[in-house]
Length: 451
Image (cartoon, rainbow, N blue to C red; front, side, top):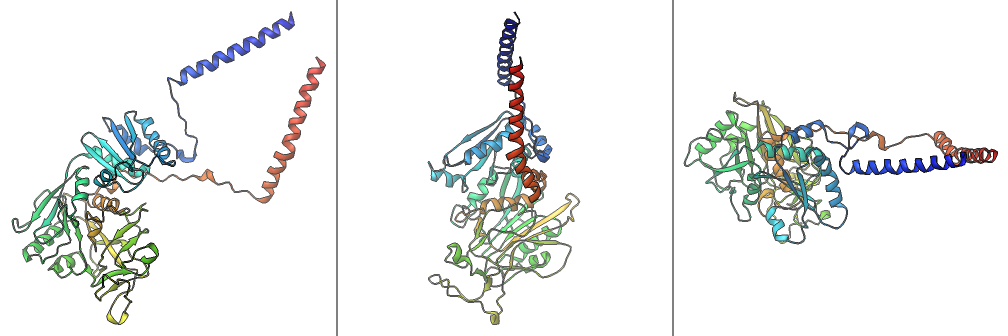
């Protein structure tokens, strides 16, 4: 009888175990629970990102242009899963960028794994897979209201709608999808920058500006307006000295050349490549390589109420070349200090900020870059040119502080132990633990034999 009860007890336990496993499987197919036990919760979204997702009142469609070979698609899907767990109507689909290269050029896709986010009738493009960049992109989609950006025209500037090689049409068209509205500004038709303009862009003028146009730009800056000034080698003497004096900067003569470009496969020393950037809000966390075809170096010449920070700087092998460069033999140049040429590293991108003189704004921002080619239709697809351009516009329009996702490290990824502790662990696992298992097994056998 006792033997029968023991067998029934064993069968009952097995039945209950099967029923419990079935119940767990049934419940797990209908309910999900995810727990993050990592240090600082680094595998979960921050509170800032969750707050942004809570403000999205519609579905978000994300398209990833990732090559199917390798693990990139799994990486993208795993990263976005954290967002999908919080907001269930975020969809993700993949497109092979190799199937339609012409379409990729049209979309401006230059980085494998680039994302395009669609929300209502707006979109954002991302080349960086990080919580900060994605959350900020979602915040821009929520914002929605158009920013008015006026492009100075009439003096040989790069056109915002230009489709020629030197135009900015491709770049500006992509920005317009994220809430920017580009309008022309011709000082032959108006005498001042219109009210309500969020940013004025002076993009590489090739002709001298009329004194009235220069004064209108100076007045606009003095009254607190934001400005992006792109200049080029040889275009420093175009009547813009009053504007440069207002900003306290100077465009240095000559063209910036870099003798280290040959190691990167660049045969023209006028091509400046950057992969490292001085710390500034525009370049914080930016690691993509950028290409600048022809650059003018810049210098800060006066101390003023502007806070001036360089965010683009050439290498120590660069200098300002004064002699004409033969396109057939561009490498036949040498640094000549006696001619007044300046040795690098040299700055060619300044970000200026100050308390705004306008009561409607808290801060005024200006960016001066010694090159406009890097955003042109010809060179926009090189490395991180487009991404850097977007960061410049974001900073000028005040969008750099949308969401400051805190950095969360991984302190539990590294185990530091002494040699003595390592020896103790080795003895424990190789000797002590096997002996304990043998003793435990022997005890179990001994007790069974006594029954």
